[in-house]
Length: 222
Ligand SMILES: *Cc1c(COP(=O)(O)O)cnc(C)c1O
Image (cartoon, rainbow, N blue to C red; front, side):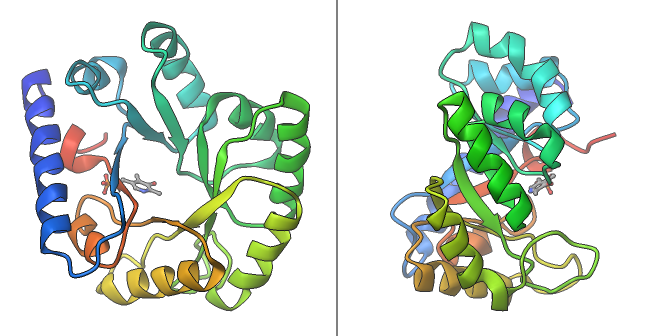
């Protein structure tokens, strides 16, 4: 996709977010756009930076380090969120690079993040991933386990901010967004990371604070 087209897409998505918030009965106090740049190179990312956008999402630690190390020197106010699963052996790099991690999904990872945050003196904001569809192949705690895991992560003194979900691919997403919103409310967590290119407007109706949009901005990934 050419740079002009990418910048146009960004503008359209921001306008659709604003319209969806206006049309929502009870939108969250804010909805932030995470531009998901995974598998897109710097040439695709630059038009989005040039348009003034600063919040990006990546799925893999190594890919993000390679791409964003240099860009962060040029644009120090970039905010980077990790949206893909995190292996414990990459936790140190993740804590150093990312401003938020949306994929906290098991006690072992929470404990490793606690020691890495203490070591680095740096604490990314955390989201617990909930497997709202209880899909066996998908990461995330089950909805039943969510409140106990929230308590465990809180007890570690980590900066827990919200919950995140990826609804099953072939189901209407609304019930999953509603469930995530309810679980976040019950846990007293302010943030809900939900909604992607195909369903972010629905997610906003259910109170999304962070929507993660890749394809609708950058085009198809190879
Ligand atoms: C890739 C990805 C997205 C973006 O998906 P699009 O359909 O390209 O908008 C959002 N969230 C997660 C967790 C992803 O891995």
